[in-house]
Length: 391
Image (cartoon, rainbow, N blue to C red; front, side, top):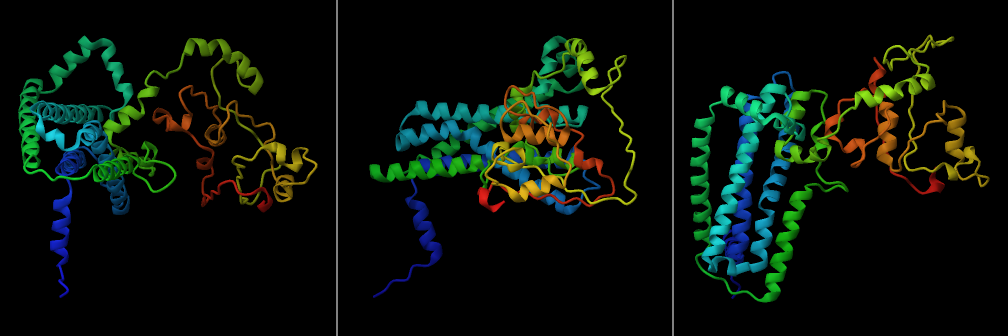
């Protein structure tokens, strides 16, 4: 006789077969995510000024922000998760492991809370989320600490953080005890399967994208309204994303030594530092023309007929260039598409030593060429490098 098992009962039965140490990992990640999302809610309620922002942009910002929060939750617990996966069910057999996990989780909640508290104060002061440039306040720690003491209820805050640590430790112990009950005997082959499956799930949560590129801070800046962009960011991730660029700055004295050379080359005024250059056209357009800005991404000049290749490999691109204004003297001093794109749309050389300027969250506010076309309806088209014969 065929026995029909209800779907709910089947799901419960399958859930019971999952080892407790796997449930322990995902339970902790879930509560960390809720905790981090709670701070996003606080920021939305008390700091974000989104009165003039459309509901569509708020919805997009919230969904993107929660993805950042999930990424942070997984990254926070990832070291302990790997440790638990390696020792699997033996994790619940030692009181030392219990204490290690409790201390780790308590410190995680404490550090996250401190990050968000500093972020709230930083945003209230400068209207930007916490980034690595905030470390400049440590250069004169005595003055910064005095301002902190005089501006905020520090002693009440310390008391509150002490209570948070106590609650976090009790929570960590409770979760450990819940999953310490019962032991499911599984084969080594199944242990390997659970290890690989859990590792892949957590890794995908960190990557947090179905595209070729992982979830990055730059995705938060999808709007021209800075308030909604700041709401989208996760300050902890943003802090570490900007950490490599924390010491970037302008050496004005060194710059003044080289400015005369630059000014002579660009025909700029020598007596003052001024890069503004006005061009007057002899025969200006009477009717506003349509403008198409074509950037040949990853196309080397060696393959193009207009640059001397005798094989006539690129007849269509050559014909477009012959009818267009071609910037044949435009050079970028470093390889890679990102450097070329940044220099093309901003007019500034990409001089970053760490990675590329497009990866630096500290210099996102730039004057780009597309925004100078006032009164134009703009469309953007992007296509990855195709086979040469298709051009």
